[in-house]
Length: 402
Image 1 (tube, rainbow, N blue to C red):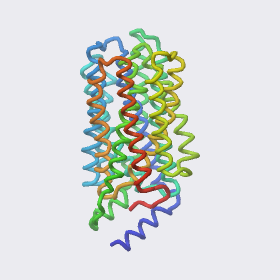
Image 2: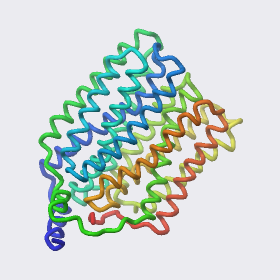
Image 3: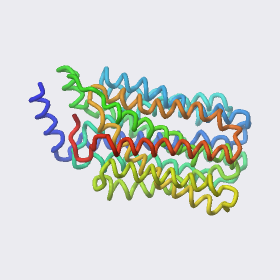
Image 4: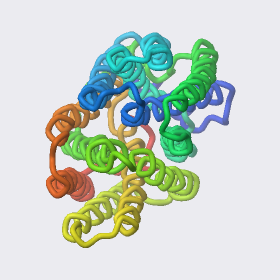
């Protein structure tokens, strides 16, 4: 078996670009675009005229709860039944949830829609990363994972720009819903069309058919990735998404647009030029050190910062945060054995989303200083994780899976 699998692995790692790769990229790109739109919509809908302030907390918490369960359940299903069946199945809750958000004018069905769509997209995250790691030729793997996952940032930037340009009057909600509906309809059409023609992961199919073998998990890498997940999954919303509703309601769309624009540009540059030139260890250490130091500066000088300088530091934090996101996106599929990859990625992300679920009610009524001290502690965890991984983790850049 191992001899035959080594031949399959060599074939997949060195294969030319084929139709299946294009289908996979189309499907994953549409998934990440939808993920960005849904991730952004939760804080943005709190500005809609019919959403009472008392509902903000429930709308914001619906997102991480859905993502947590989606990552966990779909990760398990993708390991048990295959990447493709799980990938097709995630479209159902996603589509139902998006329909509820688009058609509803009451906060409760919108919160339910956010939960359902995030459940589907949470499953998409796990399966998408597994597929990219298992199907992409080795020379394209890191670059493609970063570039495609960065589409989530681009879609957040676009949807927040839409809200930023719309006047805060009741009629603007109809325009925003129409554009939101059009964006998700096109993305869903691409996702549906590409997924039904997408082949099953050959790595998963072979190892599932012939037995998975024994490969112990590297617990140091798992611990480091879990700390990365907490920092990115919690730290990104705290500096870009929920920072508006919680601390600066009048600047919700402005903060979201500026930070995600910085992350989008960084993702393009890092993905195309640097992802395969910097070791995963060095890239992670640079990213999480920069993220921690930038938030520490806000804590130390919060009382004397002008709004403009505050935004500059947030943007700088967004640049480091995007590099941290990119390193984590590459490391998750590269660090686990194929038959357990889906659930392992799901477990890592569950840690981050569980902390996020607790964070929402904890910070909903926090003062400005307490908010940023907590955010700084979150970024400190990422820095500790980067040190752990740098000192004892396994380098995966340019290394074949398994």
